[in-house]
Every structure is written in structure tokens, then in C-alpha cells.
Amino acid sequence: MNYSNILLEKQEPVALIRLNRPKVHNALNNALMSELSECLAALDADDTVRAIVITGNEKAFAAGADIAEMRSLDFSQAYREEFITANWEQVTRCRTPVIAAVAGVALGGGCELAMMCDLLIAAESARFGQPEVKLGILPGAGGSQRLTRAVGKAKAMDLCLTGRMMGAEEAERCGLVSRVVADEQLVEEALAVAREIAGYSAMATMINKEAVNQAFETTLQAGIDYERRLLWASFTTEDRQEGMGAFLEKRAPAWKHR
Ligand code: CAA
Image 1: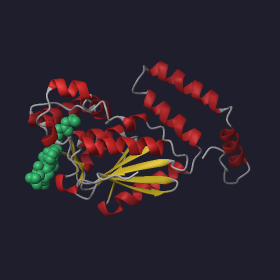
Image 2: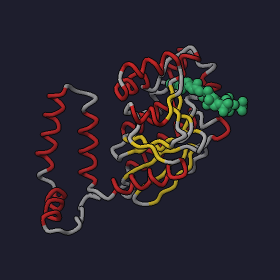
Image 3: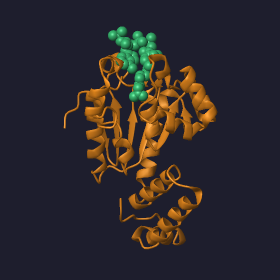
């Protein structure tokens, strides 16, 4: 598959996707989001790919939905074409772990895309924001919900109502990102994390991801019940026998489900 708005590099067992519209700070137009969606679906179905990194360039992860393209959009068209819903949410459907590696701006839909990923690693230059209020709209790719769950009401209101940007240090402090690294190490660090994840049993990474995601969908007790059933189910797998056996026999595990 040939893409013109993203660059795909497969380095088995991981894949790196670079958003690639540098002239417009990787503004996320329909063509880019359709390519990204298709690419993620293909990678998710590819057993040789065990973790995925999405990044931008040194100035921008993405400056949001493409404002030039949105300018003429009316309700009727947005409704008929399911604007956002049609091709923005594939990343949330991936069972393969997805890491966002953010340098420069991640604004509006760019911040929302990064928040849809499982893990968010920021370069020191990263700046996050939901500046839609300045355009007379609000976040439309889950930002008002995911940002609030990630950082709490106080920061989410601050960012959404003022449209200000938040730097990497503040983003780490309030729990939006898991690590901050030097700009020149961003992609290597993200790929190293991806390779570390890819080194575990695919079954184990999938059930861990599924359980953490449940925390956003259910009550505490229902989430704990869900976790416990996944744990009990995991006892039936070859990989948990291998993992525990390898630990006790002081050897490296040879996973069946890679
Ligand atoms: N859509 C379309 N074009 C964009 C864009 C966007 N989101 N962001 C930047 N560009 C374009 C600019 O129009 C400019 O194009 P020209 O060279 O043709 O003039 C080019 O990218 C370079 O941008 P700037 O000259 O503005 O660069 P800068 O370094 O001065 O500023 C910036 C960078 C802070 C990212 C600034 O461009 C900016 O504020 N961009 C808009 C951010 C924004 O409002 N994002 C939210 C979009 S709405 C949304 O995402 C809705 C949703 O939830 C899905």
C-alpha cells in the first residue's frame, strides 16, 4: 500500500508511522486520517507487528484537524460523512499497543490523536493544547472527555477554556504523558519501549491493555471483577505456564504467542 500523507517503516517486530504533511504542521485532513486508519488496521492484522509508534516531525506531532478543509463543512455534510467518526478512531480499535511519540505541537485533533494511543511519550519541545475555543468550536475527537479523564477537571477546563498550550514538563506532572525525553532521543526511546513491549507474550500485552482500558468504562468493582476474570483466564494459557516456568527455572521465556 502506498501512502502520501504518512510514512511507514516496518522494523519487525515494531512499526513506525510518521505523520507527513510538514508544510501545514501535519494538519490532519481527511486523506491523512483515512491513510492512517487503513495503515493501523493493516498493522493490527499483521502478526509480525507487535507494537506501533506514531510520531510527527521535530516541529509538530500534529496541529489539529485541517482548518482549511473544515471551513466549508456544514452540519448536513458532517452528519452524512460522519466527520471524525468515519476515520479517526481506528487507533482505539487496535489490539496492538500503540505509542504516540510527540515533539513540537500536539494541538486540537493532534492532542486528541495522541491521547487515543496507549502510551504517550513527549520530547522536551512538546506542547499540548485544545485551542478549538479560539475557532468557535470545541474538541471533536474525544478531547473534552479523554483530557478530563487523563488530567482532571481543573487542567482540562483551563486548557479547553483558554486554549493555552501546556509544555512537556507540565504534561508529565499532570499525568498526560508517561515520560519526557530529549528531542533527539524521542523516536529511539519510543521504539525501544515498543520493542520491550513486543518482547512479551502477545496474549499478555493484550489482556493488560484491555484491563487498563476497562478502568475508563466501568465502576471500580466492575473493573476489578473484569480484571480478576482475565487473570483466571490467563492461567489457562501456554504463555503463563512458560512465563512462570522460565522464572522459576532461571531462563529466558520462549513465548508461544508472539
Ligand atoms: N489546519 C490547517 N492548516 C494549518 C493548521 C491546521 N490545524 N495548523 C497550521 N496550519 C498551516 C498554517 O495555515 C500555515 O499555512 P500557510 O503556510 O499556507 O500560511 C502553515 O500551517 C504554518 O503554520 P503557521 O504559519 O501558523 O506556523 P506557526 O509556527 O506560526 O504556528 C501553530 C504554528 C501554533 C501550530 C499554528 O499554526 C496554529 O495555531 N495552528 C492551528 C492550531 C489549531 O487551532 N488546532 C485545532 C484545529 S480544530 C480541531 O482539531 C478540531 C478537532 O477537535 C478535531
